[in-house]
Image (cartoon, rainbow, N blue to C red; front, top):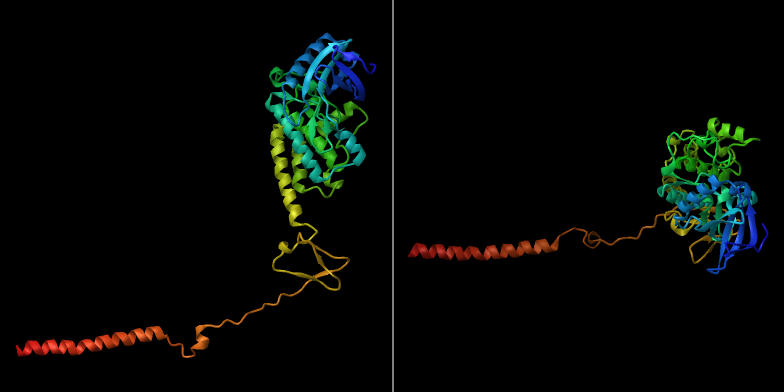
Length: 373
């Protein structure tokens, strides 16, 4: 489709952003509202199918009702020039798959930060009764300020329309990322999206997919039957608890996984907090406040202490010195009074004795007075 084409007399195509097996994506301008938008134009083989067009419209309506900071907003959809199209917010950024191909893998911190956002967006859709069905790094857009937005809810189905006994020969999703039940042609569930999120995390942390094969049929078999290789084999820095969480997420049986992306997201938030606390406790840069009982001293070079309290020095070995307990002589009453006499008590006792002694003559005088009367 030529650039500068205007769809529905409103959306002017400006630049081709990318393409996939199902659609081509353009940056365009909304001439009515005068804003940048992204347009996904489906290929003719899909657009020509009347039944598919009806289903696409139903799913687009459901996806357009989603309003969440981690989900690409859908503005409009329609049919023009023999093509189905969907209008979405335009978001400057790069898809996660491109970043993975460029970087190889992500750190634990980065993975948790991004996947917590992905779970928030997908979890919101689960609460709204929608499954994504095609979770993969290609559908995660990362902005320069590390915000993540989930896109391509166009193939999601409303949960209410899915019957438990439904089975189809059509496999929704990408073979590298879809769940065992999707691979078997069974109806997907929110747990299916959770499985796909686990595949994405596995790839982010190890730099490779857990299952690889030359054909979609062989990949489907691996998802249904094979166990993923241990993650620590490729990345020893992965915390054991995080690896165990991903193993649970990649369970073949949906009931053994987390039921929704919200549940997985809460677990990842907990793991992120633990990981940050661990890094803080095992920081390689010592501070004065980190060990109040041990003051390390440099053996042969100058140690500089910044205003923030960080200790830095050039190629020196810090050796903790033995602590010398310094005591300050305390002057007590016993030092000034070697006989340890309590003078206040003694004076009070003498005063009482004088008073009692003065009463004795008084009582004798009273006694004699009564005797003579």
